[in-house]
Length: 146
Image (cartoon, rainbow, N blue to C red; front, side, top):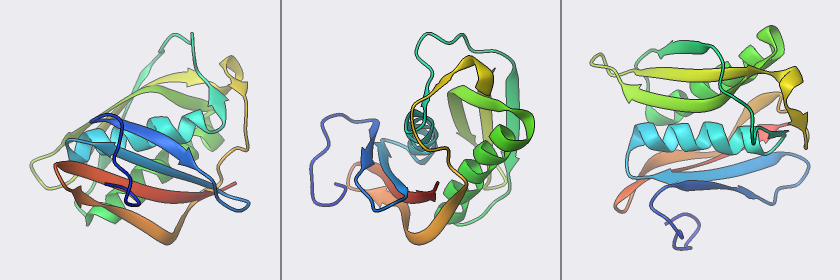
């Protein structure tokens, strides 16, 4: 459970009201799926990707770290690619790697191909960050500076 509320589905994400910044929560049966939901949840706070065809695949190898650092690394990399390469993930797949890290595969689109519907994220805030096992699955909550 996130914040003491039962989730409507085994996997999902939602935006949570937060002063001046963006806060998202995500949940899924596995750590990897929860990370993928967090990426999707963050993108949906500021871009409408409905109907956008996934383009080139990008990979990001995340070194082994504690769970919260993995979450921050994946979201920061997504923000970095948006700022430097002008691309956003349309789909996200995350897999555990044998060394304890992660392999993230994104299918991207150019930021010019989507309609911006909210404030663009600048960085992941470390306060009130949470990511870990939660009942029958995994959940996370993260605030993003906009």
